[in-house]
Length: 363
Image (cartoon, rainbow, N blue to C red; front, side, top):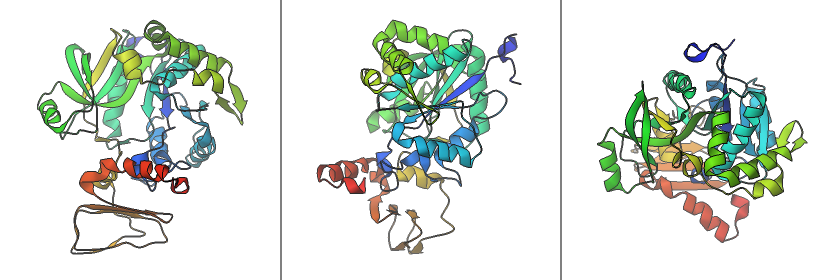
């Protein structure tokens, strides 16, 4: 039985809504359109998606609601079955429409089942090295949800990262929750260095906790067009092999924008839990993966006078390194990537170049 949050008589459940429809282009050549980043074993012996699902099980959590692109329906079901998890619902998007539309669909769906239900909306492709710390933060944010806050989670920065957005916190609300002063876009290096010297700034992890009914109300106020399109897509959805396929025509009408822009920057009810220090890593580049991944014991590279390199190779190839430093060498299915660690943010440009030259077969 789920515990009662904050002494309330009425039991509140957290519904994990796990977003796993992205392509992860910066992790080419492993992450490709047919089998993207979240469905690979990049850090542990489970896929990143499976680790996310397993992190959110227990007495306080309802079965997960998985939101993914319809092309990944088979992968989602297959990987859930591998870890013995039966989802509450699998909702399929016919096309990508960013996180505001996802939040709208999730809020409508959960509110219909449980008017008091809380939603933990989060990506499926992040690594959390200290899950207990993360879950404690979720617990605290859930206690505050009854007070009417939409809470985002600010990660304690450990370097002047230019690849993440930042959030500036303001006045204290209670515990580790603060009002949000401002959301900041990805900065240049000089600005990022100023941010990390100021404890009011945190990385924006794109994780949110909110009451389903409150999110419906805030969307109705600040982004009614998105809420209307998402509601229509859900009402006209079809059942496909036990999954909910959103109506393509209705969902296509949803404006593509983030929940940050559509709601969090508009509402007076935005809060941030910060700083959250749970060894979070968005594993968005090969350099980030290399910082936490253990060397492959089944197919290790041959390294001679080489150091600081990240190597991931499929079973059919062995990589040998001689006299090199700080490289990422990735081999998968005949596709090979070699990049210096300080340029891994630019791997997405390879995908763009392949697309421009008609090499869709490599994507």
